Image 1 (tube, rainbow, N blue to C red):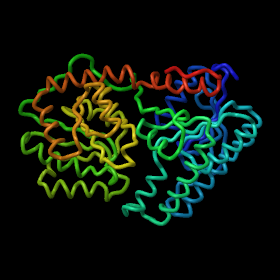
Image 2 (image 1 turned 45 degrees about the horizontal axis):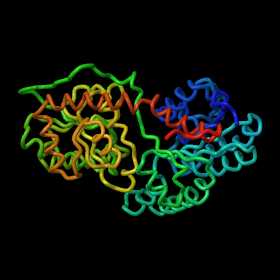
Image 3 (image 1 turned 120 degrees about the vertical axis):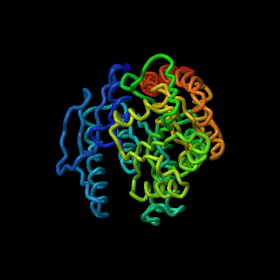
Image 4 (image 1 turned 90 degrees about the vertical axis):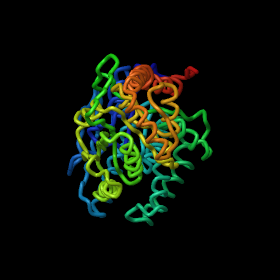
Length: 414
């Protein structure tokens, strides 16, 4: 087996090029490469691109696939076919480059290609699942939110079969997004020894933060409640509007900022309609999607940040990035008893965790709005927790530990 500083990986990901998600761009593109791993990539172009090409990125080579960004059904199908065509290079590359590991993230058809290619070259095959895609497709088909229910239903069952009956059984190791997802995957017959939970984190150096106890006591001025993230229907953010209506009864100067947008104009309209029905439309602001730096400016001025997660199978397995971003900026959080969120808030003392009930959520928000000293202390606790456990340097330690075991024959530390 190679020493770690000579390990060569080929990474196929559903993320487009150039990747922006931190669990690809930072965790692998910076941290793992910084530890001596040599990583090449098969990624599809994010921008419209008629011809595939090869380029350099983060000290590795990237074979960038052509794409079609049209919105018709034919164009979408063509985009997927172009992506698969690019991933077929896995056979040539594994033969030419002699990679020690082929890593696939959030792909299904291409994972089958990678299994064959890795097997013919005696390379390890590692799979990364960041979201329960098969279950999400089935859920949308069943609850009526899918535009093409039959397609979503068939896709969900096909991906579910591929994932739990071929891809994961053939994988040498599997990274998942959370401990809850790990339990969910185990319930489908995957051995615990093959699974490692890798939560989301932040680039701590890029997150704006003012050291010291940040006490915001704006007597007579607006008190800001901030939610950062998508307002897509699956998130049921109308729940938060009803919570806010209860808060306003006790704290009239409160305002709710929803920093993000929906996947569809209907998503935002549902929230606007609910705010109008409850008589709080004048105090609810939906910003739409913003650059991250601008979005974080809203969080910096927040009195309380909120992180509601509707308790569904799909959302329970997520690793909430917004929670960690709030805490990294030193903000107290009110969140509900989502599996990972509950554990983080308990271990960090960085906020209040309550049941997913409007009255309970509103009471917690009011408690922190009325006690800025307590909110500031929780914000400091949260920041300290993120610095210790949720930087990508700390998360890379978890990933590298498993690669040492998989590729170098060592034992992962307990």
